[in-house]
Length: 89
Image (tube, rainbow, N blue to C red; front, top):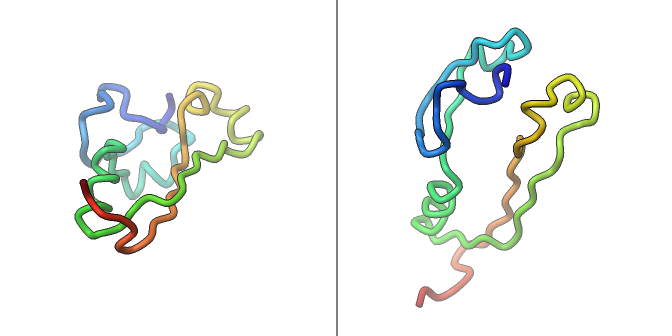
């Protein structure tokens, strides 16, 4: 996958990485930071933010057509949270 994921990394390998793919101009320049979904959710909970809604919108068809390998995986994660939204049990 050209630049959408570090080729030698596993999902659970969190951390900073830089793309080397030809199409990844921004990630090649500034890098990217990978975190697991559980890391994001746990960080929200630590700050008393409760997940209200989640979405994983698909990338634009033109982007996906040019990057079929990358488009097979979620590209975006959108979360809506509420502060103090519940009681822990």
